[in-house]
Amino acid sequence: MPFAYGIEKDRGDSFFESPALSFQSQDKLHSLFDLFLDPDITFTLVVGAGVSLDAGLPSWRQLIANLVNSPQFEVRWREAALSDGADLIRKAETVLQMIMATRASTPSEIIREALYMDRGGTDIPITPGRLADTIARLFMMLKQTGRSVGLVTTNFDTVLETAINGYGPTGETSDAEDSFVVTPHVLSETLDEAGKDPGWDPSSSVMHLHGLLAPGKKEAGKLVLTESDFLSVGPLVQRFLLNRMRDSVTIFIGVSLTDPNLVGPLWQLKGDYDEGGKTFVFSVCSPQNAAGADPVDLDTAEAYEIKKVDALAKVLPVTPILLKSYGQQMQLVNELAYLLQLDRDGRAWVYMEDDDPASSERYGHRLTRVLEKALTNINCSSPHDFPTGAEAKRLSDRLFAPLDDDGELTALLREAREELRNSHSQRDREIYRMFHQAFEDERFGIFLWLRSPLGGGAVQANYSLRLVGTSVYQHRYEWSLDRTAEVRSITRFPVAHAAFSGNWARQDEEKAVEWQLWRSQLAVPINCDIADLASEEDSTGKYLDDVPVGVISLNSTMYATRSEWHRDDQRSILSAMYTATFDRLTALLQRIAIRVIAASPPSPAPAPDPAGTA
Image 1 (cartoon, rainbow, N blue to C red):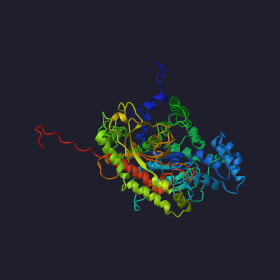
Image 2: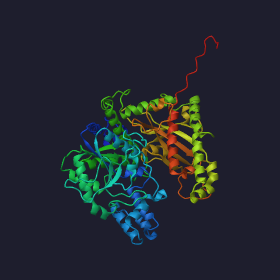
Image 3: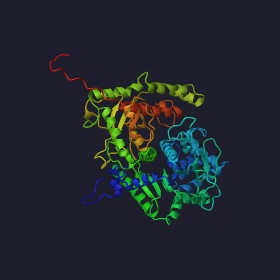
Image 4: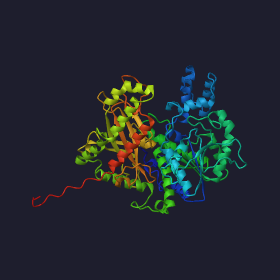
């Protein structure tokens, strides 16, 4: 962003020029990590809609839009309701009452359909996203290291419980014998004098403040969605939260702090202490309504988000931790869990005190080491921006191998087609019958993107991705390939969107020319540690010291996200996969990426014999 001569940049502008996950850039981040090293502190993790959204469920705003778009809502009022700019709680009240006036259903039945309508049914298990996964590991590490912790959510679903129950007592993926089980708990109608819920055991259950509406199960507690719900249940929720905030270090994750039940206790807490040293909020500086903005406007919109957070911190006792993306939010949660693991092993000092780039376990140093190793392995280290010549061909060959006739990716895609063909669902068999030729004609390419090296060490942050290789062609000359994708909230690159969200992204490409080859992309983040790049075994990408080094994309010659099915459409098998198979696909793509960047460069050819003999 341009600035007039002599005008100093304020925090809203300079934040984006420095690393976010840095003790130097954010001193409050260091304070937060210090608190996690105190074994006597009680923690409360307040988790909002960001966790559900990351698992594929609708946001609060989208949930209300689903209510409006449901068949039960009168078509006559639909356009007016969608454009209604009322507060969400008032709008939810209006829409729900209008549906109930014409349909003999309970509020929970109507909300259930809107909450799970895009999943094809209400009994389909929900797969937690990466944010829920990192929160689960942090929760388990807090418990394992003897910290007292309570997990509280405003969500109706059981995404957190599913994520936690996938881990054993060590915080790693569990076997059946060592699995740890948590259950949901809804806020009791009566609290004790201090505001505690006598029936809640924080060590073994997740508190649902706004009620529970799990897939395929009956609702529990009072569902809080509308204005009348907030007015009737709000005082109880706020009493409970106020008690937790007074007695613990409270961290808001995936929460926008617009919910009156969350903001109310903070106003009451303001009189207890002036500094926000006990209550933290992870704030992703992402403009909510910047779609279509030009680059200059986007710069201003992003800086304005920081001004909003700073303004909130001046009137409420909260300490904001600023982040550039949701991917960074997930990484921060993971870093806190990793610090606890190091503390358990008596090595917390290598994170908190050691600043040696070669030995420190701090995030920035780990990321630099892993990225440099990956770039070296594919002969892409300085001064080269991309592998060229024989190295480019070698990288391209390695990326193509999984797509060969007997490649593992080809086998999985073939299996996905057979699942449709032999499905018990008549609708799915019909999809196969209509589109099997398109599925057979579909062709794929793999593209590998790595994080751009940090510019200026810890002083500047280059938050972008660079294309380093593909399975479909190789570049002989460095100047022939210069594709960079900046990681920002508004981007046309699916790979940048995947890095920003911290989760996979699937997107159709806008048709530019008739001969356009690629019509869709599936982009998957790559997370690994330095040991993965030295091992010949496949990595799961689920270790606490993993860092996000890039994104791998699977490009298709067919469309992958269109919602309507037409017989003459160019449909990709990616648009018709079962959830379990799709999850296997994204996991396989990450393993392929790590395997490729873990490859050691070939040994140099022997020097020619000066005598000219062999």
